[in-house]
Amino acid sequence: MSVFKDHKISLKKVLDFIPEALLSHLSVTTKVDHYSKVLHGKKMFYLLLFCIFDNEKLSQRTLEDTFNSSGFKALFGLGEDEKVRRSSISERLSKIDPNYFKEIYEQMYSRFSELYTKTEIEKYNLIRVDSTIVADTCTKLKEGIDQKSGKKLVKFSFSFDGILPSGVEVFTGQKYSSEETALPEAIMKHIKKDGHHENIYVVDRGLQSTRVMNDFENQSVKFIIRSKENRKFEEIESFLDESKALESNGWKVLKDSKVKLFTGKPIQNKRGNLHYREEKVDTCFRLVVIKNEKENKEFWFLTNEFELSAKEIADYYRKRWDIEVFFRFLKQELNLSHLVSLNKNGIEVMIYMTMIASMLLLIYKKANDLGYKTAKRRIAMELRDMITAILIIFAGGDPDKVFKT
Image (cartoon, rainbow, N blue to C red; front, side, top):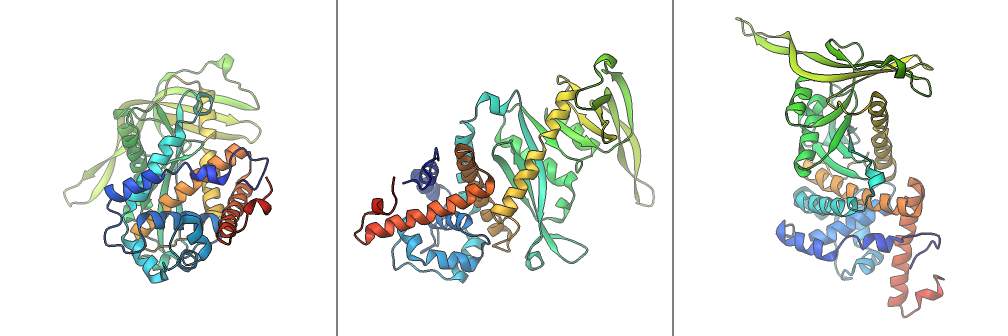
């Protein structure tokens, strides 16, 4: 049954991408159902997925009311006598194995990414990497990144391939307040999952460490990073072709050079105090400086990719904006700004469920050529109609008389 006749794919078909066999298999391999009488892993999965799609703002009370509703039980085949309380959901989120949800997410991403065309992934897999912070209700967090205001924050560092989210890390430790720590760790963990990749990681100005860039080069990690302007460097060789310097649409290449960068080497003096001595790194990088002549603004890029043209490097960096659009989608449409659980275990469960929901929604959106808000609204409408159809059947009626095909 599809509510919208112009759709190429219905919600029911999208949900079929989640094999029952996978959920059952992972229930055994992750031991997610140990010590649980009612809220088994599969039930929690469907409860969270349903509520993410069907609610503007999610809460533990919403989860309780939804689980205890006849419509939800009918849709997912639960017994009418099954009941839960908010406190049980809260405790379950704090203890349930998040690897169950992580495995579902990773297997679904692997399956969906196989559907990409060569045109969509282009010559290289561009992985946009950035972080977003959630502070809503975070003063009550059991662990988080402390701020001067007294609030505690949670940092989510995402990897996004331009179509779907390809990875996420949850950071609550104080050292991850700096992107110089969070982003490299997120990138290296992403690489461990994709060992035979041809990825180029595109990063904004939050990451500037020469030592990190040197580590990336030593581990054959390709990157394009927007640099702070006027940082110190030594030019080794210029690739600038004056005849091709002026690009279209008012963009001009000012510099395209092989360079060596400087870093601070930590030195401890006799009194035990630590200071930094400027030191040049032997590794060569590429510095590209492009000017927007209309706005009279320069953009500096550092990379270890020497085969691309300066224009391609700038164009690839512009595609980093995709992850900003993705963040806005997560916060506005999938409630990422609001934390349902206040401990790290529950936060990890919710972020993986949000990633799963986002993949299903993005596939539904792309297949049916919809906007983000329209896709979310229509998914919620289809969910309610699926419940209505099941309840009509239970009552001895014919849903085809209600839903004309």
